[in-house]
Length: 294
Picture (cartoon, one colour):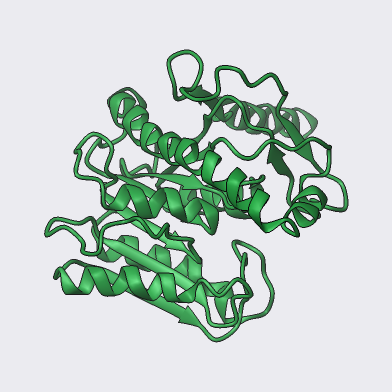
């Protein structure tokens, strides 16, 4: 019995280490636009970060790869873009937790750490809350970082598609999901006309959609899944409705879920609110789109 337990333990250890997440740098060399950045990336696990570790001061954009078990893998992949007001990234509830759910569906996932506003302290949430009182400076900082974050989003698609075959992925089944600020990366990429950098399906979740996106969707726009809550404190629901309406007007596939309760930033948090089931609806949507077929 003792030997059996040891064998089982070793097998489980092999299974876990055999699927250890790998990290890939998406840019060859330094990311364009941040050549002179000298600060170091950090992770806030204090009370400000809560139970969701926050990555901040991202200098080198990377993808953390969560491969699906080969026994159930279907070749579909999703690049996940966490939110955080372009100041930090919710890497768990809007990152790894989503990836692990998708893995159970046979979908491989990548969590993108894209560039964010420089934090001068070790408490990026507290610093952001102080900074937003100076609205003109906050807008200036956001205007400077958003183009870099959007470039990271597009480059992540290019990178995954280039390496898809070696990872056992279908280069025509590369999707993108983004939360809040991360939704901007998805929203902009969804309108991209370049085949190499446009995702094959998109899911902006309580997303911020920049005002400069096109007024109409292309006739070949990728399938769209949208989710948000009516009681969103940041009042971003109109942006979800707008992008959904653009897809409908273009005659493209689109699904919309606006929950009565859930607030902003619900992610994979369980709050005993209607929004708790959004990820299951996304799983259903993937099935309908034929993205869960081997």
